[in-house]
Image (cartoon, rainbow, N blue to C red; front, side, top):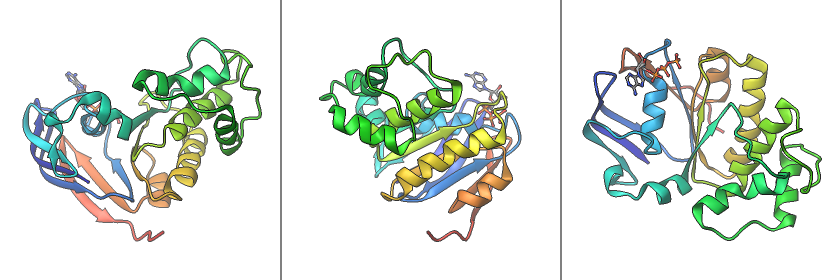
Length: 216
Ligand SMILES: Nc1ncnc2c1ncn2[C@@H]1O[C@H](COP(=O)(O)OP(=O)(O)OP(=O)(O)O)[C@@H](O)[C@H]1O
């Protein structure tokens, strides 16, 4: 699905060859500052390689329109982004950005059920609790139904239980549809529990890439 070929980003990342397969959960691990977030940002074109290239389904990402790419490859920040307005507005926001037909109330309620948020679509979003905001942000991404979910762990530590709850929700909903999940975590426990493939990054280079032995 993704293939790095002699891809460099400044002096931060240097990846001569790396493939990320579709339909799998791939996790990037490695010490702080090793380049994990930078690698993830390259996958949805937030940044582009300064040398070399990254292919997506065989096409150089440089030749793919950024807006349409981000329809297929969505970054879910673990710090929830909540917009002014009600729950419905927040669920529809991605569709508005992308110029797509807005989701029906029925579909919105189905997603709220999946993320276990029992709120009315008309209720204001800014009064939700932190955990509820997180579930609403996840619902927004699940509703967009992308091909690839990028989950970036904030370096400012969320507690592991919250991080795992987010991952669990996405894995349950996305992996059951054979979607691709690529995530960054500092937690070896989380990496080993959920990943098919683990990639260890050290000083901007791939140190190890191994099959985690998960086959479902
Ligand atoms: N736009 C940028 N300009 C200059 N340096 C940058 C830029 N983005 C990241 N860096 C540096 O590149 C290195 C890798 O950063 P990155 O955020 O990818 O690391 P990380 O492995 O995700 O770290 P953490 O686990 O702490 O989040 C760091 O030293 C960071 O300071």
